[in-house]
Amino acid sequence: MKMAPVTFLLGLVATALITVFIWKFLGAPVDMVDAPAGKVHCVSYTPYRGSDTPFNPDFIADPARIEADLVLLSSVTDCVRIYSVDLGLAATVPLAAKHGMQVLLGIWIGMDEEKNAKQIAQAIELANAYPKAIRAIIVGNEVLLRGEQTPDDLVRYLKTVKEATGLPVTYADVTDFWMKAPPALADAADFVTIHILPYWENNPTSAAEGVNYLKSVREDVAAHFPGKRIFIGETGFPSHGRERGGAVPSIVSEARYLREFAAYAESVDLDYNLIEAFDQPWKRALEGTVGGHWGFFTTDREPKFPWTGPVSEHPKWRLEAGSSFALSLLVLMIMAWRGGKPEALGGLAAGFGAGFAGTALLLQAEHSIVAWRTPLEGAVELLLFAQSLAVVVFVLPEITKKRQAAGPMPIAATLDWLRAPNRACLGMPLYLGLTQLAVAFSAMVVSMGLSFDNRYRDFPLAAFGLAALSLALLALNRGDHKRALPNRREETLFALLFIVNAGVIAFNEGPHNAEALTWCLLNLLFALPWIGNLKAAVFGVFSSAADAKA
Image 1: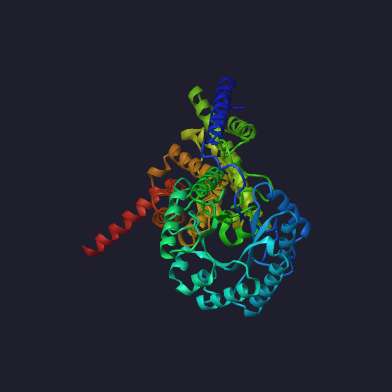
Image 2 (image 1 turned 45 degrees about the vertical axis):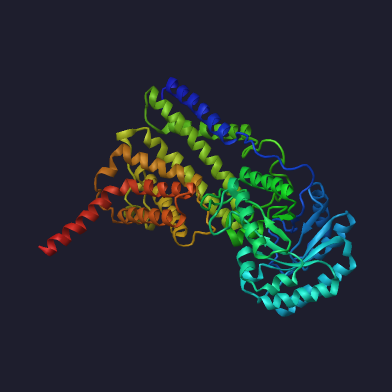
């Protein structure tokens, strides 16, 4: 071990202190409004778990699974909303009746008239067989939003179902399409069902302001449909996923919004349905990580938060702190074994760095667990974690050597070695070059996606934060950022693209998205080691232009 024992002990103390501090901060309980006593009015329910998906026409929901879910949900609600009656979901109605619950019976309306007719016929049969179990029939969900039918078609469907069952009927959509619809649509419905999701609105709203936003929208809709009852058909907040403006998905955000909304709804006698009972992994294919995390139960049927009392984002923070410390200790040992010989202050700095690195690795692993859905996505997450480990093994120890640190091999030379490997090039410059190339390429792929197709993409801060900061510190120690290094055309292009992407992402996401702004900062850190080459290239272009004019 190159690090002196006393220095290592100082680093160990620093690692323990910073690890406990970070996790205690992340796991701090947050006070918020308690939900009213009693049960919530209704919740959206689908039985899909794991790889189950409604896009599989051969899927049939297991009635035993549905019954087990309803028994669990009966502790928090007396009503569930389903969106269709195919794929075995029709069993929800008799099972709900068996357990004294009611159903908001959904009829899925799409472009296929034959399928629509089958849905309507089956729903009518269910409603007439179990009328007391049906709270209302929702004929179509966001059909106008998807552009799959006209308002006149929906009016015809509503009248058909109403005449055949005599039960309350309605249509559900986002407020914009209700406001634009002809009056005949509202006239054909017993009440107007609107969806208000502060996270997905055109101007995303935080959980803290979500209820105020909903209240304002509801009042606008009520004024547009005087004398018509307004029913909140969907409202909720996600627990994981990317930020949108000031809307930050988290367990605390979800709990805050749902609890404050329930309190507001009781105060004004507002009827509603929450989205949704259980996390739905299949939605990640459509909406990214955030799409699969709207449930207030996990896919394992565990509650995410209590409905009263403080809520913690990391209720098991002590266990996470212990795991993070174990990783941090491993990082510190690698730095002590492979790095330089820092003095006491250097040991403290190494300890703090190891603590941050161990925490970043654990946060990256936790995000990978909630983000991946398919074997391919799992393989990508594992490769990203291996990339972070390469940063720990090769880059962090070099930082402790300061001016004596090795530098990464140029990208062109690294690519030549990948095309024709040879033992003569083996050494720290090659290992650093391979690590830097892998990190830069994968970060560039992510940034390009966030620049041009950003709506459902996460900001993988934990996966790239350690790498960006470590490579920037290595360059600062060596002074690489101050000079134009030879044979660095590829690096110059990377630096330019990182800076451009940072500007595009900041413009797209706006000033209120902290995750986006942090990712932009990481882009600038990735560009830092090559900024000298970029400056030289830009100066050369202007000099050539000036010479041409002269």
